[in-house]
Image 1 (cartoon, rainbow over the protein chains, first blue to last red):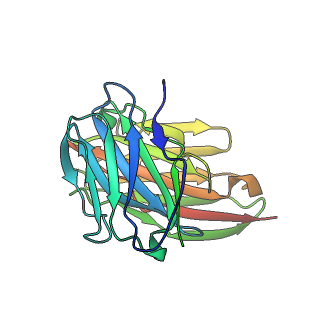
Image 2 (image 1 turned 90 degrees about the vertical axis):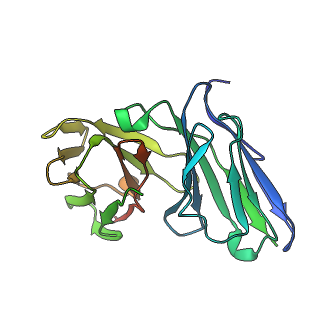
Length: 115
Length: 110
């Protein structure tokens, strides 16, 4: 497709379950971001990739969160042993070279609810 | 790690008020700065990309300025409307690093 694609769009997980959220960036885009937005709160940066290199993971809230982009294209955000506070929308974004002024394109998000 | 600060964190204004908020970032090796508007349950919407010191951009009632020497950008909204309520994110790019600020959450009361 032409845009950033995220799956699943909606996920309900039982507390303690592991989840994996997938992001398919626009083909050829070097930069990839993950963001988290909990209900009623502002967006929180999670992590940033340039190709397969994870340049910044300072926003990952705990060691239960793990992101990878092994071949520099598709990225997966994994959350282990989910907790209720993990319930949020997880947004993925990609860009060719945002630091050079190229537009950053966002997916529609994966809505995670932990019950 | 690129340190980006946005202020204020949140802002409540009345319909018709004009408002502005700030994005601060390290000024060295600056490349570009992005402003995005993010409404709950929607994907962020690109507002501006700014690259040159002194740049001013305008889109309707929203405008932005950029000062790369001192490391800040201002976003202005003239005559705020309830539909302007959203989180406004900035993202400066520096060398090979880029990240979004935490955003300014604007609420416009009718």
